[in-house]
Length: 208
Image (tube, rainbow, N blue to C red; front, top):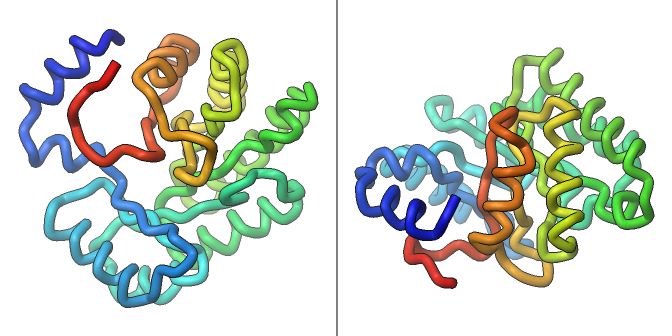
């Protein structure tokens, strides 16, 4: 995945097709319910893949916007909640009507070297998501905190845990995603799962 390839895709893909690849996200702590509704309206208007909204609003939004695919977060934004808490967050979100979950990997456990815990945590959330309704699970590894080697290893763990996507950033970390991050993730998962670039993306131009 070279920058030239990404630029080529951006130039050749239609706006409508590009929109289908984008999650329209509103996770700012000061977002109001009306702000969330606006994001859902825009998701439907422009054909975005999903509206990613705060967990507290999932139930009412899912009831109001039955034609809008709703996603929410688990373990957001730091990732170091206990497995019990993450499981309860996932169960509640699915019961309230989400189609997708963006889960933050336990970055602290990963940096500590407890790879088995990280793998099992993700696998348990995936099991819940699939057993409760085949809900898509994207795992955020927060690339800004990781070395190149750690990005590769974290991406491999996400793939081995059978998540649907490995995702780069929360948007609350030390930096946004880079093309280099995405290339490392893409090569690491070897086509087994999807790769989602997120966190700090504001336009379609490529910068080295």
